[in-house]
Length: 153
Image (cartoon, rainbow, N blue to C red; front, side, top):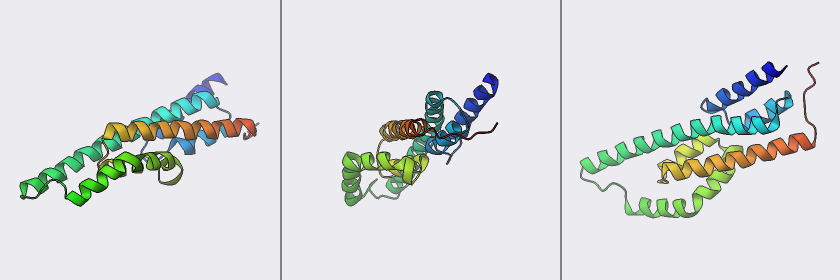
C-alpha cells in the first residue's frame, strides 16, 4: 500500500505542475483518496509553484517585448495613466488577487494578470504561492477535521 501512496503523491505533484490544474483542486481529491494530508499539501503547492513561476516569468517576457515595440514606434513604454494604475495595483491590488486567486480565477491566470499589470514576477509569484499554501492547508485541515474520505475497499 505504501508504494501506491508514493505514486499517488508523485501524481499530485505532476498534476499540479500542469497548467490550469491548481493545488486547491488536487488537495481535496488526494486526501479523499486517502493520501497523507501534509505531504499532499506540500507536493501540490510545490507543483503549482512551478506552473505559477513559469506563467509569471513568461508573462514578464511578453510584457517586455510589447513595451520595446511601443518604444521603437516612438511612444513611451507605458502611458502615465497606466503607470499610475500599475503603482496602485502593485501597492494594494496584488494582495487581493493573491488571496482570492486559488478559489476564484486560478493561480496561473492570476500570475499572468498580475505581471501584465506591472507587478514584478517574483513578487507576484511569491504572494500567489503563499496564498496557495494557505488555501491548500485550510482545505486539508477541514477535510481531516470532518473526516472526508472515499472508502474504496
